[in-house]
Amino acid sequence: MRKKLLLADDDVNATAAVAVFFESHNFEVRTATHGITALRWFSTWQPDAAMLDIDMPGANGYEVAQHVRRTENPVKRTLLVAITGEMPPDEIAARCYQAGFDLYVAKPADVKALAEFVILGITG
Image (tube, rainbow, N blue to C red; front, top):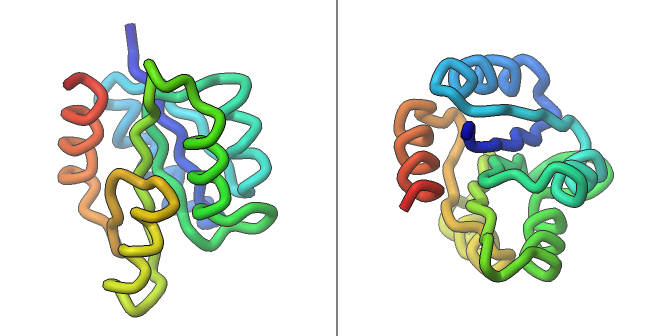
C-alpha cells in the first residue's frame, strides 16, 4: 500500500516538482495551494505525512498544523514538515515545533533529504 503525502504550498511550480519526485518514489500525492484546502485533505483523505508551507492563504501552516494535532487520531499520528523561507530561522523553527511540526526546513529544501526523513518517519 502506497503512503499518502500532502504537499501544501502556494508556489504551484515548486509543489509540482516535489510531487513528481515523491510520486516516482511510490507515494500517493495530493496538493493544496491554500490552507483551507489542506485542512479539507486532512479530514477527507488522512495523509500519512504532510509538507506545509508556513505562508499560505486562508490558513497558514501553523494553523493547519495546530488543527491537525488537535483533531488527529492519536494512534495514527501524521508526520508534519514545515517548509518556509521566513526569517530568522531560529525563531521560526521554535514556532514550528510549538505548532506541532516534526521538522522545520528552510527553503530551498533538499528534496532527497526530505524524502529520507519522510520515509523513515512514516515507516518507523
